[in-house]
Image 1 (tube, rainbow, N blue to C red):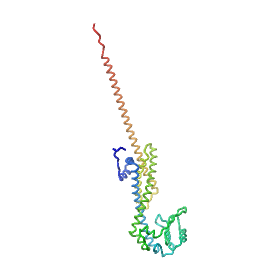
Image 2: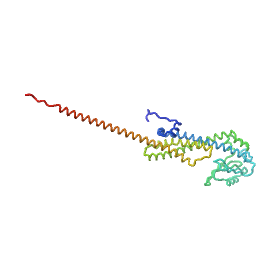
Image 3: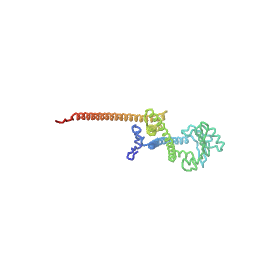
Length: 341
Protein backbone atom coordinates (compact mmCIF):
# COMPACT_ATOMS: atom_id res chain seq x y z
CA UNK A 1 0.00 0.00 0.00
CA UNK A 2 1.32 3.40 -0.93
CA UNK A 3 1.89 6.03 1.71
CA UNK A 4 -0.31 8.45 -0.19
CA UNK A 5 -3.30 6.08 -0.10
CA UNK A 6 -5.91 6.87 2.53
CA UNK A 7 -6.90 3.95 4.74
CA UNK A 8 -10.67 3.77 5.18
CA UNK A 9 -11.41 3.20 8.87
CA UNK A 10 -14.85 1.88 9.84
CA UNK A 11 -15.83 1.99 13.50
CA UNK A 12 -17.28 -0.97 15.38
CA UNK A 13 -20.95 0.06 15.29
CA UNK A 14 -20.83 0.92 11.58
CA UNK A 15 -19.38 -2.52 10.94
CA UNK A 16 -22.32 -4.07 12.77
CA UNK A 17 -24.74 -2.05 10.62
CA UNK A 18 -22.89 -2.75 7.37
CA UNK A 19 -22.57 -6.46 8.20
CA UNK A 20 -26.35 -6.78 8.54
CA UNK A 21 -27.64 -4.41 5.85
CA UNK A 22 -24.98 -3.83 3.18
CA UNK A 23 -23.38 -6.83 1.51
CA UNK A 24 -21.40 -4.58 -0.81
CA UNK A 25 -19.41 -3.28 2.19
CA UNK A 26 -18.01 -6.72 3.01
CA UNK A 27 -15.07 -6.49 0.57
CA UNK A 28 -14.21 -3.03 1.91
CA UNK A 29 -14.19 -4.28 5.52
CA UNK A 30 -12.24 -7.37 4.49
CA UNK A 31 -9.46 -5.18 3.05
CA UNK A 32 -8.75 -3.86 6.56
CA UNK A 33 -7.00 -7.15 7.21
CA UNK A 34 -7.31 -10.29 9.33
CA UNK A 35 -6.26 -8.50 12.55
CA UNK A 36 -9.14 -6.00 12.36
CA UNK A 37 -11.60 -8.80 11.59
CA UNK A 38 -10.43 -10.81 14.64
CA UNK A 39 -10.68 -7.72 16.88
CA UNK A 40 -14.24 -7.16 15.64
CA UNK A 41 -15.12 -10.80 16.37
CA UNK A 42 -13.66 -10.59 19.88
CA UNK A 43 -15.66 -7.42 20.66
CA UNK A 44 -18.87 -8.98 19.38
CA UNK A 45 -18.16 -12.18 21.29
CA UNK A 46 -17.56 -10.13 24.46
CA UNK A 47 -21.03 -8.58 24.11
CA UNK A 48 -22.59 -12.03 23.71
CA UNK A 49 -20.62 -13.29 26.74
CA UNK A 50 -21.88 -10.39 28.85
CA UNK A 51 -25.49 -11.32 28.12
CA UNK A 52 -24.82 -14.98 28.90
CA UNK A 53 -23.04 -13.98 32.12
CA UNK A 54 -26.01 -11.81 33.14
CA UNK A 55 -28.32 -14.76 32.52
CA UNK A 56 -26.09 -17.02 34.58
CA UNK A 57 -26.05 -14.45 37.39
CA UNK A 58 -29.85 -14.26 37.38
CA UNK A 59 -30.04 -18.05 37.52
CA UNK A 60 -27.55 -18.11 40.39
CA UNK A 61 -29.53 -15.44 42.26
CA UNK A 62 -32.74 -17.46 41.83
CA UNK A 63 -30.90 -20.59 42.95
CA UNK A 64 -29.58 -18.91 46.10
CA UNK A 65 -33.07 -17.56 46.91
CA UNK A 66 -34.57 -21.03 46.44
CA UNK A 67 -31.77 -22.54 48.51
CA UNK A 68 -32.44 -20.10 51.35
CA UNK A 69 -36.15 -20.91 51.19
CA UNK A 70 -35.53 -24.66 51.09
CA UNK A 71 -33.12 -24.56 54.05
CA UNK A 72 -35.51 -22.38 56.04
CA UNK A 73 -38.51 -24.64 55.44
CA UNK A 74 -37.11 -28.15 54.99
CA UNK A 75 -33.73 -28.50 56.74
CA UNK A 76 -33.68 -29.11 60.52
CA UNK A 77 -31.87 -26.68 62.81
CA UNK A 78 -28.09 -26.83 62.50
CA UNK A 79 -25.05 -24.93 63.63
CA UNK A 80 -21.39 -24.76 62.68
CA UNK A 81 -18.78 -24.13 65.37
CA UNK A 82 -15.09 -23.91 64.60
CA UNK A 83 -15.43 -25.90 61.37
CA UNK A 84 -17.71 -28.66 62.71
CA UNK A 85 -21.32 -29.03 61.55
CA UNK A 86 -23.98 -30.34 63.92
CA UNK A 87 -27.67 -30.98 63.18
CA UNK A 88 -30.66 -31.93 65.29
CA UNK A 89 -31.75 -34.65 62.84
CA UNK A 90 -30.17 -38.09 63.23
CA UNK A 91 -31.36 -39.23 59.81
CA UNK A 92 -29.48 -38.85 56.55
CA UNK A 93 -30.98 -36.07 54.42
CA UNK A 94 -30.87 -36.72 50.67
CA UNK A 95 -31.81 -33.96 48.22
CA UNK A 96 -32.08 -35.26 44.64
CA UNK A 97 -34.27 -32.64 42.99
CA UNK A 98 -31.57 -29.95 42.92
CA UNK A 99 -32.48 -26.91 40.82
CA UNK A 100 -28.90 -26.38 39.67
CA UNK A 101 -27.18 -27.77 36.60
CA UNK A 102 -23.79 -28.31 38.26
CA UNK A 103 -25.07 -30.29 41.28
CA UNK A 104 -27.20 -33.43 40.85
CA UNK A 105 -27.51 -34.63 44.45
CA UNK A 106 -26.85 -33.44 48.02
CA UNK A 107 -26.37 -35.81 50.96
CA UNK A 108 -26.23 -34.49 54.56
CA UNK A 109 -25.15 -36.58 57.54
CA UNK A 110 -23.33 -35.00 60.48
CA UNK A 111 -23.09 -38.21 62.50
CA UNK A 112 -20.45 -39.85 60.32
CA UNK A 113 -17.04 -39.28 61.90
CA UNK A 114 -14.72 -42.08 60.79
CA UNK A 115 -13.35 -42.38 57.26
CA UNK A 116 -14.91 -45.83 56.90
CA UNK A 117 -18.37 -44.41 57.63
CA UNK A 118 -17.85 -41.62 55.09
CA UNK A 119 -16.67 -44.06 52.42
CA UNK A 120 -19.70 -46.26 53.02
CA UNK A 121 -22.02 -43.26 52.81
CA UNK A 122 -20.43 -42.17 49.53
CA UNK A 123 -20.61 -45.68 48.09
CA UNK A 124 -24.33 -46.01 48.85
CA UNK A 125 -25.34 -42.58 47.55
CA UNK A 126 -22.99 -41.88 44.66
CA UNK A 127 -24.71 -41.42 41.29
CA UNK A 128 -23.62 -40.36 37.81
CA UNK A 129 -23.04 -36.61 37.92
CA UNK A 130 -22.04 -34.36 40.80
CA UNK A 131 -22.88 -35.35 44.37
CA UNK A 132 -22.17 -33.10 47.36
CA UNK A 133 -21.69 -34.76 50.76
CA UNK A 134 -21.97 -32.64 53.90
CA UNK A 135 -20.35 -34.45 56.82
CA UNK A 136 -19.50 -33.26 60.31
CA UNK A 137 -16.08 -31.80 59.57
CA UNK A 138 -15.82 -31.60 55.78
CA UNK A 139 -17.57 -31.16 52.44
CA UNK A 140 -16.87 -33.74 49.75
CA UNK A 141 -17.57 -33.03 46.09
CA UNK A 142 -17.65 -36.22 44.03
CA UNK A 143 -18.03 -36.15 40.23
CA UNK A 144 -18.81 -39.54 38.69
CA UNK A 145 -18.86 -40.25 34.95
CA UNK A 146 -20.82 -42.93 33.08
CA UNK A 147 -17.60 -44.95 32.87
CA UNK A 148 -17.60 -45.25 36.69
CA UNK A 149 -14.62 -42.91 36.93
CA UNK A 150 -14.86 -40.32 39.70
CA UNK A 151 -13.07 -37.16 40.79
CA UNK A 152 -13.16 -36.39 44.51
CA UNK A 153 -12.54 -32.98 46.10
CA UNK A 154 -12.52 -32.30 49.84
CA UNK A 155 -13.12 -28.93 51.55
CA UNK A 156 -13.25 -27.94 55.20
CA UNK A 157 -16.13 -25.74 56.34
CA UNK A 158 -13.74 -22.98 57.34
CA UNK A 159 -12.11 -22.92 53.90
CA UNK A 160 -15.48 -23.08 52.15
CA UNK A 161 -17.01 -20.24 54.16
CA UNK A 162 -13.88 -18.08 53.88
CA UNK A 163 -13.70 -18.54 50.09
CA UNK A 164 -17.29 -17.33 49.63
CA UNK A 165 -17.50 -14.66 52.35
CA UNK A 166 -13.94 -13.41 52.33
CA UNK A 167 -13.75 -13.65 56.11
CA UNK A 168 -13.33 -16.23 58.84
CA UNK A 169 -16.59 -16.99 60.66
CA UNK A 170 -16.13 -19.03 63.80
CA UNK A 171 -19.80 -19.76 64.47
CA UNK A 172 -23.11 -19.58 62.62
CA UNK A 173 -26.45 -21.37 62.76
CA UNK A 174 -29.36 -21.98 60.41
CA UNK A 175 -30.89 -18.53 60.92
CA UNK A 176 -27.56 -16.77 60.34
CA UNK A 177 -26.96 -18.78 57.19
CA UNK A 178 -30.41 -18.07 55.70
CA UNK A 179 -30.16 -14.36 56.51
CA UNK A 180 -26.71 -14.20 54.96
CA UNK A 181 -27.99 -15.77 51.74
CA UNK A 182 -30.70 -13.12 51.52
CA UNK A 183 -28.49 -10.14 52.48
CA UNK A 184 -26.36 -7.70 50.48
CA UNK A 185 -23.27 -9.48 51.79
CA UNK A 186 -23.74 -11.91 48.88
CA UNK A 187 -22.79 -9.14 46.43
CA UNK A 188 -19.09 -10.02 46.73
CA UNK A 189 -19.92 -13.61 45.86
CA UNK A 190 -22.05 -12.56 42.86
CA UNK A 191 -19.31 -10.20 41.63
CA UNK A 192 -16.65 -12.91 41.89
CA UNK A 193 -18.95 -15.44 40.26
CA UNK A 194 -19.84 -13.04 37.43
CA UNK A 195 -16.18 -12.20 36.64
CA UNK A 196 -15.20 -15.87 36.66
CA UNK A 197 -18.11 -16.86 34.42
CA UNK A 198 -17.45 -13.96 32.02
CA UNK A 199 -13.74 -14.77 31.59
CA UNK A 200 -14.48 -18.47 31.07
CA UNK A 201 -17.29 -17.74 28.61
CA UNK A 202 -15.25 -15.17 26.72
CA UNK A 203 -12.36 -17.57 26.13
CA UNK A 204 -14.70 -20.42 25.18
CA UNK A 205 -16.91 -18.26 22.94
CA UNK A 206 -13.91 -16.74 21.12
CA UNK A 207 -12.63 -20.22 20.29
CA UNK A 208 -16.10 -21.31 19.13
CA UNK A 209 -16.58 -18.13 17.07
CA UNK A 210 -13.19 -18.58 15.38
CA UNK A 211 -14.06 -22.18 14.50
CA UNK A 212 -17.53 -21.17 13.28
CA UNK A 213 -16.06 -18.46 11.05
CA UNK A 214 -13.53 -20.99 9.73
CA UNK A 215 -16.35 -23.41 8.90
CA UNK A 216 -18.26 -20.65 7.10
CA UNK A 217 -15.09 -19.55 5.28
CA UNK A 218 -14.54 -23.11 4.01
CA UNK A 219 -18.13 -23.17 2.73
CA UNK A 220 -17.46 -19.77 1.15
CA UNK A 221 -14.30 -21.06 -0.53
CA UNK A 222 -16.29 -23.98 -1.96
CA UNK A 223 -18.87 -21.48 -3.22
CA UNK A 224 -16.21 -19.36 -4.93
CA UNK A 225 -14.82 -22.49 -6.59
CA UNK A 226 -18.26 -23.43 -7.91
CA UNK A 227 -18.93 -19.84 -8.97
CA UNK A 228 -15.51 -19.69 -10.69
CA UNK A 229 -14.42 -16.54 -8.96
CA UNK A 230 -10.95 -16.11 -7.46
CA UNK A 231 -10.87 -14.68 -3.93
CA UNK A 232 -8.00 -14.99 -1.47
CA UNK A 233 -8.95 -17.36 1.41
CA UNK A 234 -7.92 -14.80 4.05
CA UNK A 235 -10.35 -12.32 2.45
CA UNK A 236 -13.06 -15.01 2.50
CA UNK A 237 -12.32 -15.66 6.19
CA UNK A 238 -12.52 -11.93 6.97
CA UNK A 239 -15.92 -11.71 5.27
CA UNK A 240 -17.03 -14.88 7.10
CA UNK A 241 -16.28 -13.11 10.40
CA UNK A 242 -18.57 -10.20 9.45
CA UNK A 243 -21.24 -12.60 8.17
CA UNK A 244 -21.60 -13.96 11.75
CA UNK A 245 -22.91 -10.60 12.99
CA UNK A 246 -26.64 -11.21 12.53
CA UNK A 247 -26.38 -14.75 13.90
CA UNK A 248 -24.63 -13.50 17.05
CA UNK A 249 -27.22 -10.76 17.57
CA UNK A 250 -30.02 -13.33 17.15
CA UNK A 251 -28.16 -15.46 19.71
CA UNK A 252 -28.31 -12.56 22.18
CA UNK A 253 -32.07 -12.21 21.60
CA UNK A 254 -32.47 -15.97 22.03
CA UNK A 255 -30.59 -15.82 25.34
CA UNK A 256 -32.73 -12.93 26.61
CA UNK A 257 -35.90 -14.75 25.54
CA UNK A 258 -34.82 -17.82 27.49
CA UNK A 259 -34.59 -15.71 30.65
CA UNK A 260 -38.35 -15.25 30.62
CA UNK A 261 -39.70 -18.27 28.73
CA UNK A 262 -38.96 -21.95 28.21
CA UNK A 263 -39.05 -21.56 24.43
CA UNK A 264 -36.24 -23.45 22.71
CA UNK A 265 -35.15 -23.82 19.08
CA UNK A 266 -33.98 -27.36 18.47
CA UNK A 267 -31.78 -26.61 15.48
CA UNK A 268 -30.64 -23.14 16.51
CA UNK A 269 -26.95 -23.90 15.87
CA UNK A 270 -27.79 -25.09 12.34
CA UNK A 271 -29.78 -21.90 11.72
CA UNK A 272 -26.90 -19.91 13.26
CA UNK A 273 -24.41 -21.23 10.70
CA UNK A 274 -26.90 -21.20 7.81
CA UNK A 275 -27.76 -17.51 8.25
CA UNK A 276 -24.08 -16.56 8.31
CA UNK A 277 -23.36 -18.66 5.22
CA UNK A 278 -26.28 -17.06 3.34
CA UNK A 279 -24.77 -13.64 4.07
CA UNK A 280 -21.34 -14.74 2.85
CA UNK A 281 -22.74 -16.48 -0.25
CA UNK A 282 -24.79 -13.39 -1.12
CA UNK A 283 -21.62 -11.27 -0.88
CA UNK A 284 -19.71 -13.70 -3.10
CA UNK A 285 -22.38 -13.63 -5.81
CA UNK A 286 -22.56 -9.84 -5.60
CA UNK A 287 -18.80 -9.79 -6.17
CA UNK A 288 -19.25 -12.15 -9.11
CA UNK A 289 -21.93 -9.89 -10.62
CA UNK A 290 -19.66 -6.87 -10.14
CA UNK A 291 -16.81 -8.76 -11.78
CA UNK A 292 -19.01 -9.75 -14.72
CA UNK A 293 -20.14 -6.14 -15.11
CA UNK A 294 -16.54 -4.93 -15.02
CA UNK A 295 -15.54 -7.55 -17.57
CA UNK A 296 -18.42 -6.46 -19.79
CA UNK A 297 -17.31 -2.85 -19.42
CA UNK A 298 -13.74 -3.84 -20.28
CA UNK A 299 -15.03 -5.73 -23.31
CA UNK A 300 -17.01 -2.67 -24.42
CA UNK A 301 -13.91 -0.53 -24.02
CA UNK A 302 -11.91 -3.01 -26.07
CA UNK A 303 -14.56 -2.98 -28.79
CA UNK A 304 -14.60 0.81 -28.81
CA UNK A 305 -10.82 0.87 -28.99
CA UNK A 306 -10.90 -1.62 -31.87
CA UNK A 307 -13.51 0.49 -33.64
CA UNK A 308 -11.43 3.64 -33.18
CA UNK A 309 -8.35 1.84 -34.48
CA UNK A 310 -10.25 0.69 -37.54
CA UNK A 311 -11.51 4.20 -38.16
CA UNK A 312 -7.99 5.59 -37.75
CA UNK A 313 -6.71 2.92 -40.12
CA UNK A 314 -9.39 3.74 -42.69
CA UNK A 315 -8.56 7.44 -42.44
CA UNK A 316 -4.91 6.73 -42.90
CA UNK A 317 -5.67 4.55 -45.92
CA UNK A 318 -7.82 7.32 -47.39
CA UNK A 319 -5.04 9.83 -46.85
CA UNK A 320 -2.59 7.51 -48.56
CA UNK A 321 -4.98 7.11 -51.49
CA UNK A 322 -5.43 10.87 -51.73
CA UNK A 323 -1.69 11.35 -51.71
CA UNK A 324 -1.28 8.82 -54.53
CA UNK A 325 -4.02 10.42 -56.60
CA UNK A 326 -2.54 13.87 -56.11
CA UNK A 327 0.89 12.63 -57.09
CA UNK A 328 -0.48 11.07 -60.27
CA UNK A 329 -2.25 14.30 -61.18
CA UNK A 330 0.93 16.28 -60.60
CA UNK A 331 2.89 13.90 -62.80
CA UNK A 332 0.35 14.23 -65.62
CA UNK A 333 0.43 18.04 -65.44
CA UNK A 334 4.18 18.20 -66.13
CA UNK A 335 4.98 17.79 -69.96
CA UNK A 336 8.48 18.18 -71.62
CA UNK A 337 8.96 21.38 -73.82
CA UNK A 338 10.71 21.05 -77.36
CA UNK A 339 13.35 23.51 -78.95
CA UNK A 340 12.52 25.88 -82.01
CA UNK A 341 14.63 25.80 -85.24
